[in-house]
Amino acid sequence: MQLIRKLEPIWWLLFGAGGFIAAFFLPGLIIGVLLLGPSELMSSGLSYSRAHALASSPVGRLFLIAVLTLVFWHCAHHLRHFMLDLFGHAVAPIAAYGAYTLALFGTIATVSAVLAL
Amino acid sequence: MSSAHAKTPKTPTAPARKPSGFPLGWYRYRNYTIFAATCIPMAIAAVELLLGVAALGKGEEAWTAWLATLSAPGLRALNAICLYFAIYFAFRFGWVGRKIAAGRIGPISKPPLPLSILGIAPLGGFVTLWLIVFVILGGFI
Image 1 (cartoon, chains in turn blue, purple):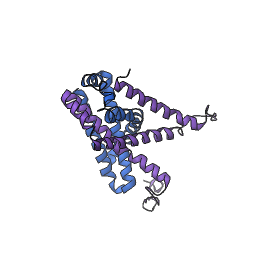
Image 2 (cartoon, one colour):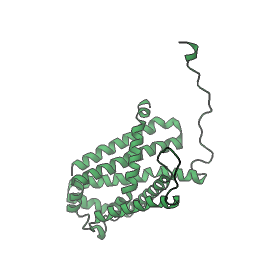
Image 3 (cartoon, one colour):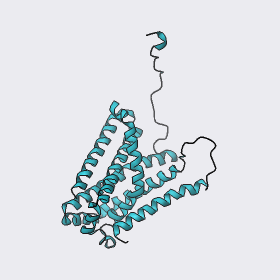
Image 4 (cartoon, chains in turn red, brown):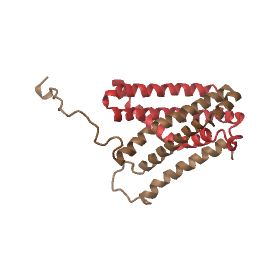
């Protein structure tokens, strides 16, 4: 746990940045892609060629990496503290290492998926 | 080492315990707990979007198939829940933000607008950004 405590400013920085990014962009992405993606309304906007062009542009890649990775880190930090609130400090190591490991996997997966575009 | 520098014994304290009524017994605890729980649906939405990016990288067939899976009723319901919690998170995040003042020296001047309006302004900003994202994704401009 010493390492986790030593790196606390970094977890906080990622948590705060992720909170801003999630508030700015996540609902728009959920509405536009996850909810309305299969509908007729988005059929031309999210056609393969257009979606690929948007996502694989330098700005698109940066946007996807920033949004997805920071949301993962934000959620990991929130989940860690949520577990502490619910189950007490007995779960502190598993909450911290478990949550941040998941976020690390999410980050690696996001960067690999974006670089493969 | 002199006795003045000797390590003082730790003050004995009672073991930490949860406040009575936590996590859902009082409206402030409830709001706090719901806000903390937003991390789960938001992470689910991010994983779904990541799967979409991966499908996009695999080619047109994978992308079309991934979009088609989103129309399954179960996934639609899950995504609606994710949206609800993502909006709840954003609004609470913005609403709490109005209470945070930058550190300053000297007397605090009166805000130019009432706090209720200053609180609503960032929420309007969030909604505008969501609309911009939606318009760009849909290719409406």
